[in-house]
Amino acid sequence: MNDDFRPSDMIDYAQDVADQMITEMPEEEAVLMVRDFISVLASWQPAVAEHRDDPTMLAITALSTTRLFELAFLKAYSFSAKQLEAREAIEKAFGESL
Image (cartoon, rainbow, N blue to C red; front, side, top):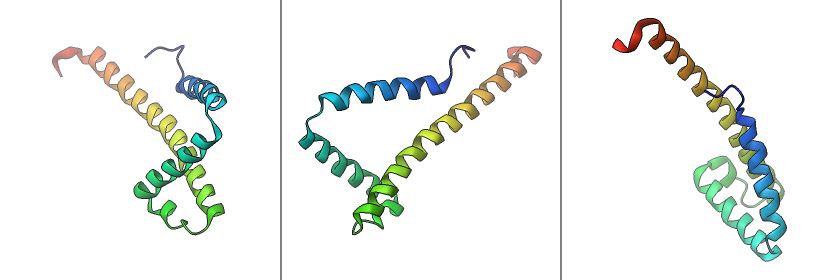
């Protein structure tokens, strides 16, 4: 693992990319993207689909689900990094004979 790299760097970079993309996105395309994205979320996550008739709750649930993805990504990345470090330590201690 690269000690200078942090998974939050990917989040920051993704934010920069999204900021650039949104400045170039026409309003009509933004509306279509939101509708399509919520449709995808609702097909994947029943908690989102439950709020199809309540636009405010639908928006809140969709936004919290996308935020949850970001947090889960950071947690999963950290877990994977710890697993890799543990494996490397074992291999270093016992050699590649494992």
